[in-house]
Length: 107
Length: 119
Image 1 (cartoon, rainbow over the protein chains, first blue to last red):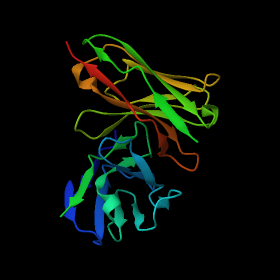
Image 2: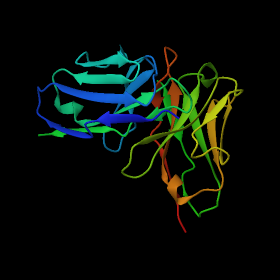
Image 3: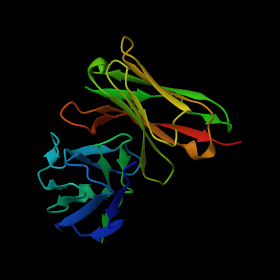
């Protein structure tokens, strides 16, 4: 199975900050990566798939990049509603696997 | 409006069984791959299983293979997860989700149902 890691595990940031989260796969997954946002007590929300395709309705301050084994999720200007936990997921080969998550909280 | 509603979560003893239904509305599941994902209390997301449109392809996480069975009834617009030989480590909120048509990734999720395995 493909193992996913994320860094950092948590980040404290202020409104307006630029935040970057890195996700790494244990083997190459092409561009088969999705990013999710999960707020406390809620179901996850798909932000990006195919490494960089922004889902309909997701603000343009979110962007994804990368291919192969290293990927990034960038929030260009953090907003109050962005404080949440973010997960990456490889969708290259079954079983699909998630990263351990990155918690973004208020500095 | 797309909706997914899971039910069936309960307290069950180790070694027991449980079946989780997920009823979809606002779309026809017959056009989509469907997925189950779980989340243990205070932990991250764990992909459990998925199934293709006609039920001929099923994939499972190693942690549940041989114990859990994913199935679907397209006529009833419903997805199911049969869980046998339950263990304490299966305790989690179980979400059903729809796979995006544009690429992999789950684009709609239910609210989840809690399964607790304990004596």
